[in-house]
Image (cartoon, rainbow, N blue to C red):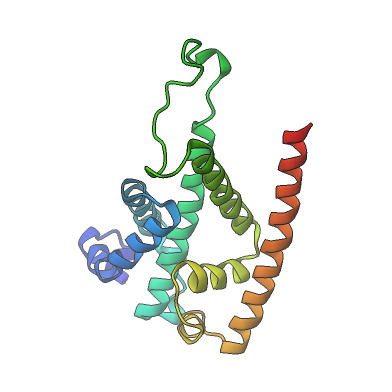
Length: 194
């Protein structure tokens, strides 16, 4: 750790290598794309390397370091999805007037209609945005339990809290997510129907 903090790339690689498969799985689960997951992992590892001095050294251990890396990866994935959504907005004048569509290609799965794909992507983006608004203590529990599918005991061990605290934070996180998502969905529906 000390060598990596001094800028030794090989030492950092040795620290991160055991956790790389878990970081990729998390990024793939959040982005729903292998290529995007690789970009997110690269970005998160670069951030981790440049911010290694911010890692709390009092809890040095494999699990604490892995949890720190996972949190960075989750935040990078959320930022990546936001940037990707913003880049998909195409000015009206750039749309193809003959076909009535844009130059952008790519439809979801074979059996999914373009409308269903769009709705699903909007919903995922909305969830990612609402997750980013949660307080860190609730967001971390939610990411570890729901996205990484860790057990309540594993989440408690990672965060250094009791299993009851995990359940309570998860209950609060789900309540806030439901409330924010229903308000945001109602707002989007109202805008579309006007």
